[in-house]
Length: 242
Length: 320
Ligand SMILES: Nc1ncnc2c1ncn2[C@@H]1O[C@H](COP(=O)(O)OP(=O)(O)OP(=O)(O)O)[C@@H](O)[C@H]1O
Ligand SMILES: [Mg+2]
Image (tube, rainbow over all chains, first blue to last red; front, side, top):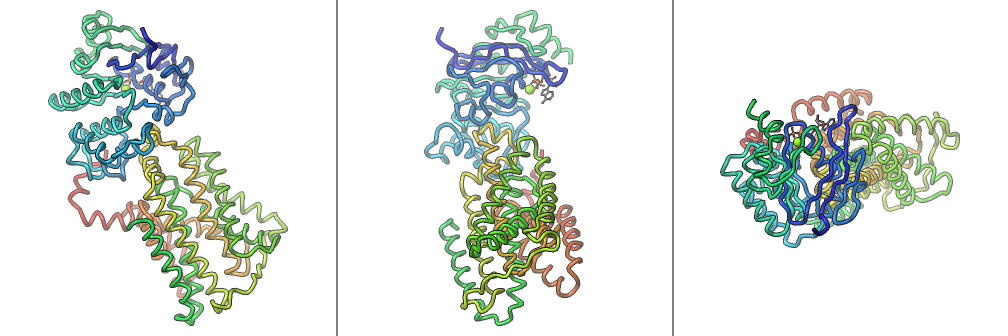
């Protein structure tokens, strides 16, 4: 097996007395579609925050393309090609929808030529084309999720990490977003998808990791995860119980 | 309007200002106009950090006062001409801005606001206890005679302030249009999201602190020449800090127009009130106007205008 694109080693993170994550280790291969699932509060977002530089892990190392990035500030990681969307949308209010996408293009890794055209293309692909010139504060929650994803795409990432990008979307919209993400992956982008919508992650991912109380409790193909008794107990059991 | 054209208009205004002393014989108008322009500069400088980047600075008077005292010092110690006093003051303001920012921005937004208040107290105390700068009783500042063209010191400093104001507004406009402005707007909306888009948030905030501090200090530099006298109470006045914040809020903080409109309006009203009522009345008036705007028009006059232009969109825009 060739060297992984992203490698997480013994990473842990606590908030006061609460151990939110780890220690966990995981490797992501270039071009892979990785799904991460787990019940609420299991540490998925915390893991992403450690990978993308928003939290400094208490222990462990994170390397990307063979380079140790554990101490790199978030914006430097973004410029290296690690792009994320936020679970709770963080729109750039005070800007139009299209200008939101120009921020990662201005500051991102590759100085994208034909910025506007690219941005318009991305807006079309997530279904926000009509909102192009609207101020971001006028979008609905749903549209904000799409904007969140569109902005992450605009960075032209090497790895896209989508933190519950599809929550609240209709089945048709989920299909649209999935096909955008399939397309992106075909173009060579590694995708890490964190999602509560089971059929979407299972359909999309080549490999799925299940977290619980900050630990990896299962890992494998979607089929294996779906039928795993451990996963069913902590995750599906809990979900159907609600 | 493109930036070169914008700068050209500003330059034309500056040139036109050269001829004002011939048109307006009464020096009082220059005396009052100076203060109005001074506030255009202060409000514009404040807005670079407070408006574009969203970091509220309560200590504008620290920067203004530091600029005034830096100028007075440079003149007293080295006899430097006004232009170098202004440049020196701007450098001091930039340094203060970066230092305050560096010490506080890394922790959290609100500490910055607190630190700016503390900075006023620290600097004022420092001047109070510095014999060379006149201490609590202040120092006289007898500037060399102005160029004959202007016909008087007041007319001259008015024009100098007009030049500073033009430079400040062009700088603000340039920031707004450039990638720096876009980065600052991103920071104002969400720092985590800005970082995730590759925006070096700390560096950009420090840059905004430096430019903002530099501009506000430059506004203070001609002050000793204007009054021929400098004392800590007026240089570090509460009214300056209050106005710096109120003017952009009244006009609107999103672009260069807001602080300019706010300053022109509020400072003019204050100049009239100073003559007709009393200068203490100003602080009360600013306070009341500020509260009214925060409650009724949080986006400022320009925000009201755009809300008026497309009321439907505004109302349908549910804020998350
Ligand atoms: N900034 C923070 N400060 C304190 N505690 C935190 C913080 N972020 C996360 N936690 C805690 O860490 C644990 C893991 O949270 P995390 O957000 O990573 O879960 P998650 O798997 O993303 O959950 P969800 O599916 O609800 O998004 C939770 O107990 C949470 O309360
Ligand atoms: Mg989460």
